[in-house]
Length: 148
Length: 148
Length: 82
Length: 82
Image (cartoon, rainbow over all chains, first blue to last red; front, side, top):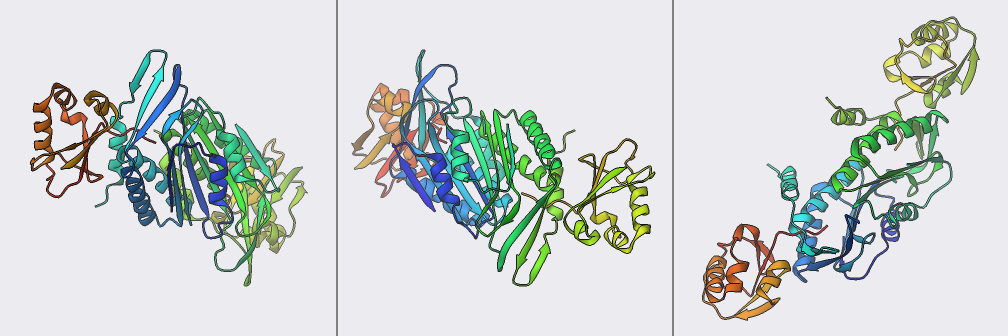
């Protein structure tokens, strides 16, 4: 399990390759990368976070994904600070014996990270700056993971 | 849309990186890599395929995934021939504006590829060689994609 | 004349990957019967059709698919790629 | 003494990222009332609690969470990472 919160850029391909390399125990690797989308004149984005709580919450989410889906390994990298369109904001990677668990774990990580990890996006464009509003759908997405 | 069927190894990390690089239109990239798992003394695996039909079927599946999930791009690479544990058998990558579509499309591609693309695995181990049997679950997995 | 292809254990059981066959069989099922009657190795390969898949001109098809105008038929077990 | 942290537009509205507060408030909700009574910028930031989230010692909590023994409370809008 590898959790990194950093201002510095990272190389998604290199990280995905290193995560998968020589892994004889896992049949399935799933990765997700979030990219700053050029949505109608976005100049840049500022990602604020809560140092300390960010790492704690990501570790909790990753540990829960590992337990639920029997992961052999998982990786979360999330940037903060200033980002421009085309830059990679964050990535997750999961390794499991079979594909269903690797996919479910990556989606679980993303759903919880979206609504439970303390990051806030502010977008800067031609019309000024605005905080991104949380989507109801992101909170609703957690419902599908509730266990009886 | 990029479909490749090849005997040669490929670099999963390099392909994932190239697929995601500088993509200002897509907010979400999902990749899946299938790796030869070292499952109880497997020495190597032979992947047989049906040249011609293989490419056709992968193109059909990728085009359907693109249409259903509004993909901006997708990539499928699948090897044939001899593979040893730890080697990457195949990968898919999907790019979409939002994560739900990128995840669903990657799972759709994998489910259809498993049951509809003409590949057959033969495993060689200490106890001899045996063709891998299709799992009922793989055929069943297609049911979740049926549209009304 | 029709090209008939075999893959995986069907290929191994029949003992060749491909052959050209002169046939008047109107359907895939009729072709299977014709081949099965010809030699034991075909009968063995085609013994359980539920364990087999068929492609007609490189598209998955049913065993009752017609063979009129068809150039290529392939028999194989369920796929195990990915 | 308790450290109170503000993030995103809560931080902007209150005008600072962090302050130490001497309080006897027994719960988060009581602390919010105390701050809101103090100055308009707090009242403005805390006007709609349904638009806010709170963490107590870096764990997400409810507004009725007790403050006994707590070192750090943070207020912020719903998260938008990923």
